[in-house]
Image 1 (cartoon, rainbow, N blue to C red):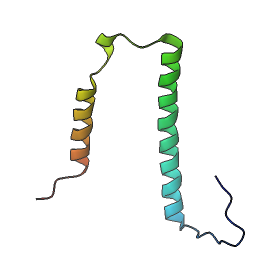
Image 2 (cartoon, helix red, strand yellow):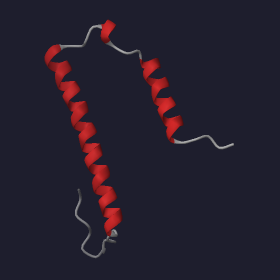
Image 3 (cartoon, helix red, strand yellow):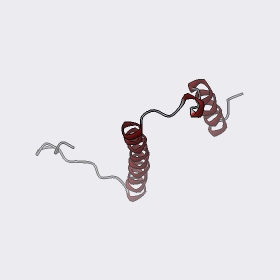
Length: 75
């Protein structure tokens, strides 16, 4: 992270916003760690058999359905 310029004051976050940013950083870090673990497993053991994989189309549809549940459509 670059250091702020000497003549630029940084705007401090209120405690609730700072907590939310830290929580988001923790979730992002956990997701990145999980992804790195999967990549390390592939590097060590190779790709899994095709029969054990989920087609990307199915993953896409599951993700879109999850997003639709989280954000109801405007009528």
